Image (tube, rainbow, N blue to C red):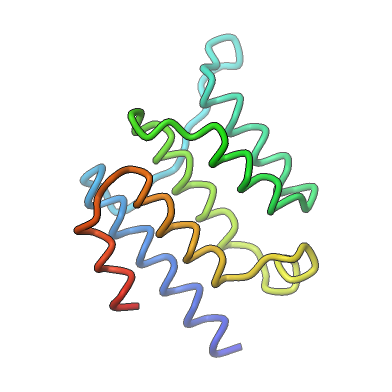
Length: 127
């Protein structure tokens, strides 16, 4: 339980730091507009949330990276929210769907790498 709490806090801190670096805010929550105004990222976000809820976490992560556009920071916002949602799940739920907190941390690192900031990657060495 203590290790789980520590990892959850550590990942939350990583997300906060990345959000602060890229968006100037302590948190990032992907906001969906009215469905009539959905963009490609909005449809992707909705699909990812549905996949998480169905337990298709690995497939959702694969889809995120398949569709990721590193030139569009909306995808970074979407990715940070995605990993935040995963971090809010229990270890039991993650494990039962073949996923772990270590994979969340690795996913965040990969996300930052895709958006081309090697300086921020040193942050991961400190955690």
